[in-house]
Length: 130
Image 1 (tube, one colour):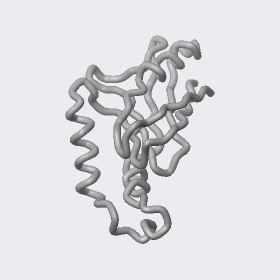
Image 2 (cartoon, helix red, strand yellow):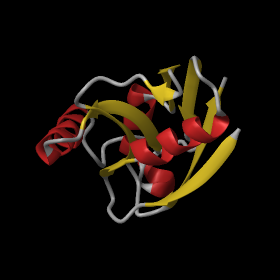
Image 3 (cartoon, helix red, strand yellow):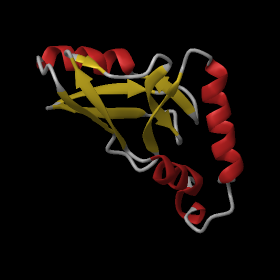
């Protein structure tokens, strides 16, 4: 198991972590298996989607904002980040990616993304390859 830190810069953003995950897969020397990418945070998530066009990430964050508006949830009375918790629950804290030939088996346009929903913060990313 390996872990690395990502420092986010905005309240909400999607950060491409594909290369860092791919490097850990290579270091693992696993030829064929599975790579689990997990964030141990209640207001962050891991997603796999396109990153070639940055508008896709912006569209995803905007859609989540439309789906889960800010400032109308009971938890906001405590620390004003209920929407971030709900969005993280919808997206989920992990993704599993097949490994074939020692490489992540992602589609042509796919990237592994850390989704920050309550930043800026320092986020841990845990990677397990088997």
